[in-house]
Amino acid sequence: MHQMIKKLSLIIFLILPWTILFQAYNAEALCISNKKANLRQGPGTHFEKLWQVFKYMPFKELNIKGDWFRVKDLDGDIYWVHRKLVTKKYKCAVVKDNKTNLRKGPGTKFDLIAWSPVDKYFSLKVLQIKGKWVRVEDGVGDKGWVSRSLIWIQ
Image: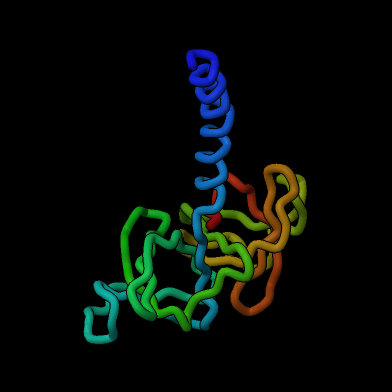
């Protein structure tokens, strides 16, 4: 009996960390898929509109009520958004600070792109991650590179 408990304890010790890691890794991420989306105080159009965001704004999914997702943004604020306005098909990012540079390649040796710098809450689609750099695309299809430390990816 003592040997069985010892084996069971070892199995739990080996499996539990992987289970926790797997759950954290699979946290549901949502991206705004429409040109614009209203974020509301509650799950319905009769609730107050708190903020309007644009295509590719990322959110962490907290739960679902009917056709509405309860979501959290990069600042930790919580909103509700209708399911028709979001997707899980790709990853999105949002700029964390004002005056964030976007570049023509993955590094500071590359020139700034024409529409750089951008400000906080500028939303982007993630195309590729290369080390500490992320290739992104804005809502009209323009592309650039940004340092991973300057954006919040969901």
